[in-house]
Image 1: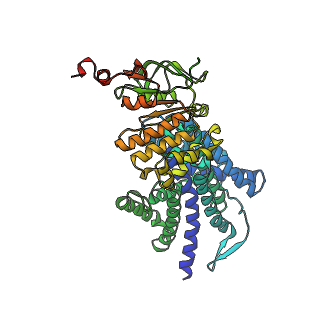
Image 2: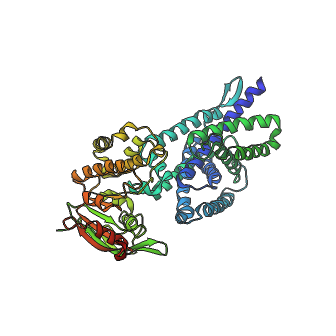
Image 3: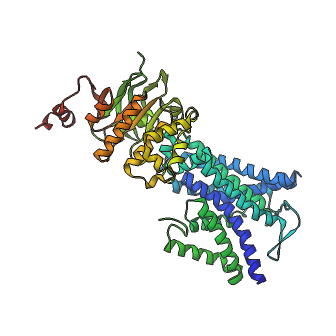
Length: 287
Length: 241
C-alpha cells in the first residue's frame, strides 16, 4: 500500500513537470505549426539564469525564478525572429525549422557549457520543509510544483479561451489569412505564442533546478518526455495535453516500480509507438 | 470627386506567376461595384492585393485619399477596408459567438462591437440560433453568413465580398442576396465578386469585366447588357448560337 501511494505521488510530481513542459510545446505547435526542439534547451537556460540571479548575484530564489521565466521568454522571442520567421513562407517550413531549432539547441547547450562551466549547480528550494501527502513525505518545493502546475495550466487555458489576444492566437493557428483579414498581426501573434511557450519552459527549468542538478543537458530528457506527452495526447488541445502529461507521469512512476529505471524510457517509447499505431491522433485526439 | 478606392496599374501574383497585369479601377464615395469574368483571371487576387494578403509588385492603391500600397493587413483593416474571403475559410474550432466577438479585433472595430453583434444576429437569425456551434460544423450557407458577419464586425467603410453565394442553392442565394442588399442600404459601399451578372446588377451600380488580369470592360447599370450580350462577354463572339 505504501509503495502504491508513494508511486502515485511520484507520478503526480512527474505529471506536473511534463504538463508544464508539454503545454508550451503544444502552444507553439497549434499556433505556428512548428515543432520547437529548443524547448528543452530553453528550460535549461531558464534554470541557469535563475541560478545566476539567485545564487551568483544573491537575489534569492524567488527573484531567480522570475528572472529565469522572463529570460527564457526573451530568448524565445529572439529564436523565433532569427530561425523561424525567415521560413514562414517556405514550403518545407516544418522540416527546415526542425533543423534550425535543433541547431539552436546545440548552440544553447554548448553556450551554457562555456558560460556556466561544467560544475553541477543547484537552486535552493522556494519553500523549505516537508509536507505529508497520502502518508508520504515530499519536499514543500515539490508540493508547490504540484499546486502551481494546474494553476498555470488553467490560467493558460482561460487566456486562450476568453481573452482577445489569446483567442487571436487560436485564430492564427487555425487560419492565418482569415486572422489577418480581421486585423490580427500574424507575425506578432507567432512571436507572442513562442515567447509564452519559452517562458513556460524557463519557469519549469527554474522550478526543476532545486529538485535536480542544473546541467547544460538537463533539458533533453524533459523535452523527450514532453514530445511523448504531446504525441500521446494528440497534438491540439491544451486539455488533452495536460491529461496526457499526468497519465504519462503515472505510467512512468509505475514503470520505474515494475521494470526499473533502466528500462522505463524503452517502455515509454514502446507505448508511444503502440499509440501511434492504434490511435494515430493520440489517446484523446479526435478523428 | 475623389474616389473612395482608387486602384492604379496594379501588378501582382504568386511567386513567378503574375496574375494581375496593370489592373485599374475605382469606386466612388457612395457607390457599389461588381466584378465578374472567367475564373482564374484575377478577381480574387485583386481583392487579396487590396487587403494586402498579396503584395503588389507595381502600381498603387489609394483608399480615402491615403496611399495604402504595401501596408500590412492589420493597417488595412484598421482603415476600414474589409475583405470577406471566399468559401470555408474561417476558424473551424471556434464557436460562432466567439468568432464574431473576435472579429471586432481592430481598435476602430472594438468601439460599438456589441451593437454591431446585435445587428449581425438580426441580419442572420440563423447565426443567433447557433451561437455555441463550432464553425466547422456549419453548412455552406451558414459559413458564408458567418464570413459576412465577421466582416461586418470589423466595422467596414468599404466591404469586399468574394463570391458570397458560391455553391449555394437558389433559395439560399436569394436569402444572402437580400442580406447583402440590406448591408448596402445601410450605407456600406460594396465590391462584390460574382459570376452571375443579374445578381450583381441587383446589388451594385457599375460592373467591371476582369479578364487576363486587366479590366476589359466597364458596364453601367443604366446601360446593362441583355442576355445575349452577356453570353458574348463570357464566351466571345462565337459563343452565341
